[in-house]
Length: 177
Ligand SMILES: Nc1ncnc2c1ncn2[C@@H]1O[C@H](COP(=O)(O)OP(=O)(O)O)[C@@H](O)[C@H]1O
Ligand SMILES: O=C(O)C1=C[C@@H](OP(=O)(O)O)[C@@H](O)[C@H](O)C1
Ligand SMILES: [Mg+2]
Image (cartoon, rainbow, N blue to C red):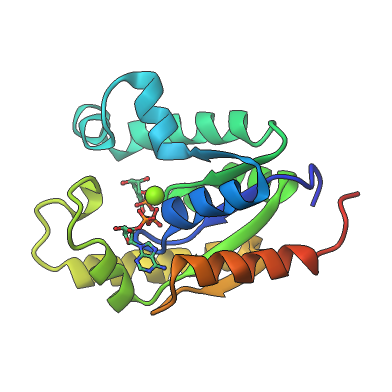
C-alpha cells in the first residue's frame, strides 16, 4: 500500500459502503467521496439515467475515469460502486493507492438492504432479485478478496460497529511506505 491515508471501500450493493464510508470519514477527519455521487454531481444526471442512455458499458467507463482520478488524491475515504472491481485497472489502482476494505454481506443481507431504494439499475425490473444478486456475488467476491487489505462481515451489524472494526484494522496495519 502506498499513499497510506486513503481508505477505499469495496463490496456488493447493500454492503453499506456509502453509509459506513461517510461515518468513517467523519470520525477520522477525512474527506468522504462516493464514486456514484461524484459521477452524478459532475454529469448532472443520476446513475439510472446513465445506464439508460449509455448502457452499463458507458457507466463503467465513467466509473473507471472517476476512480483513476480520485485515487490520486490523499486523505479520502472513497465508497466505490459494487461493480468497480470488475475492471482490472480499477483493482490495480485501488490496491496501489490506499487501504482497501471489503465490506462483505450475504445475499440475504444485500436483498434486505437494497429492497427500498430504486437507484440501482441492475436491480430494476428484475423479478428474481435474489438470483441476480447471487450471480453478481459469485462473480465478484473473488475480485473483492483479491485486493482487500481487510475483510469485514457486515451481516446484522450496525454501521457504528463496522466503523469501529475498520478503525482497529487500520491501527494494526503496516505504516505507509
Ligand atoms: N450496517 C448496517 N446496518 C443496517 N443498515 C445498513 C447498514 N449499512 C447500510 N445500511 C442501510 O442499507 C442501505 C444500503 O446502504 P448503502 O450504504 O447505500 O450500501 P452500498 O453503498 O454498499 O450499496 C441503506 O438504506 C443504509 O441505510
Ligand atoms: O454493483 C454494481 O454494479 C453497481 C452498484 C451501485 O453502487 P452501490 O454498490 O453503492 O449500490 C452503482 O455503482 C451501480 O448501480 C452499479
Ligand atoms: Mg453506495
